[in-house]
Image 1: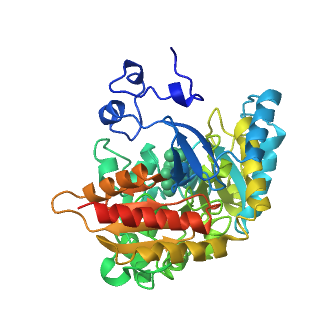
Image 2: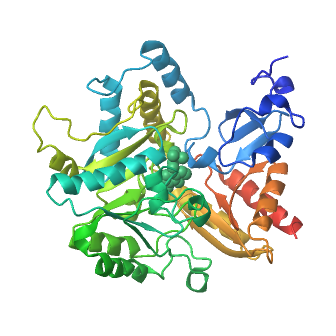
Image 3: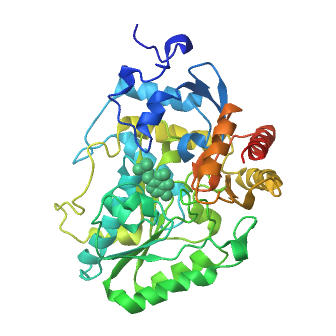
Length: 451
Ligand SMILES: Cc1ncc(COP(=O)(O)O)c(C=O)c1O
């Protein structure tokens, strides 16, 4: 009998070492472990997943920092269904369809003033690689072809393309794939428990770490540097809100030295920090924003780069019949993704998720900091509807305690993500105060169980 994903009695291919599980090479997964003990999800609605054994799991990670409005909002489901029946695909190379232009316009309206040109990709990784390429090409079209160096930051995650990996700063991700791009340097990260443990929102200490860009400029010379890329809030590296004044300082230095500033907002975009973009929430405007995930509420793969008109206009000096940027993807601006994107923005606006951001963030902050004093907890960090609970690692086994705690949470019906020694939380913005309490109580119980 073939499995039926909608039938919990026969959906999950459950059971050990089922041959039918073997062909799928799963990403970022211990394949053999998973296939010996599969964890299958067959449906979702609102704040919950449903597993193949019929359990309802509270999703405290919004899928993977994606479903900001919760799972399967009817407006998005309908928009995708209708679009699939109307126009399945059209290339975006020298062709167009109305939804792509409408979505670009809506995104430009939400983005910080001056960032109003949108290039579509299919993922965050592609958005990052696109932004890095735009940065280099921008300097070249302006006659400054020497500016090729790209500056990332320690603990950063910028997806899995070679460009994003090169500017990223999580060592285990980079280890097996070198050589990566040359001409890259890194700023230090801002994680410091001595000064910042149990900060609420942006920590007070650490703005001076942005001045390390000065040191990098001294080494390489500003005239060789194309761009600095940072996540406004480091996400996969363990939820590190920027110290007060840090991003402002980076902005100032980039402007002073003619370096483009890229904010990777794949996580912080579309409401996660209590405003449409992290840049708006934090009051610092970069030259380029990368986004994805919440762009379609996770429903159809899509990413994008939002560029300032100054960057866009530099390319438009080319002859009118010339392709100004020799770059793009078959599925850039895919009709289904655009339909989902428009419906996602409608959903965020009509459910007041942007407008209620600060209030949701305040309730969230109060909830997660209740875990201060729970066993093993050595830091709690939060901003917007993001948080990390950092645990003291077991001697000689980094990450093991957090991984076990997450297993306990799952058994108790709450999906939490692990990142090193951190329990990482990014629930849909629709989470209720009672559900916040459920998340916190479940983690507390898990921490009392693990050794
Ligand atoms: C900040 C950031 N940039 C880029 C990416 C890569 O996005 P994708 O997995 O859609 O390629 C991610 C994914 O989590 C991310 O968090």
